[in-house]
Length: 93
Image (cartoon, rainbow, N blue to C red; front, side, top):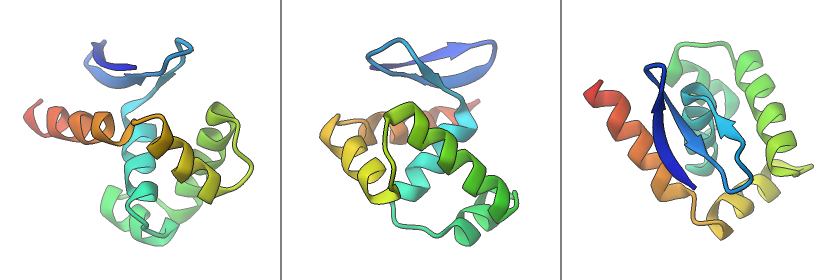
């Protein structure tokens, strides 16, 4: 996995070649940090329903049925540091 800049949109490139959009990466980071959909929506300026949609998409990408499994998968694949890197890059851009 690595971080790359594609069309001015930072993405997290996963081992299988699949990429997460910057927004998906932001939502994923907040999920891993333990935030609720409502809290994430407030932070990112989107509705909690939109956050839930992103969460469902992320569970499909990572092959998880539960949010807790998604969090465990992010940690077990050492993706959290890459999510933080994307956040730092987004603040620079």
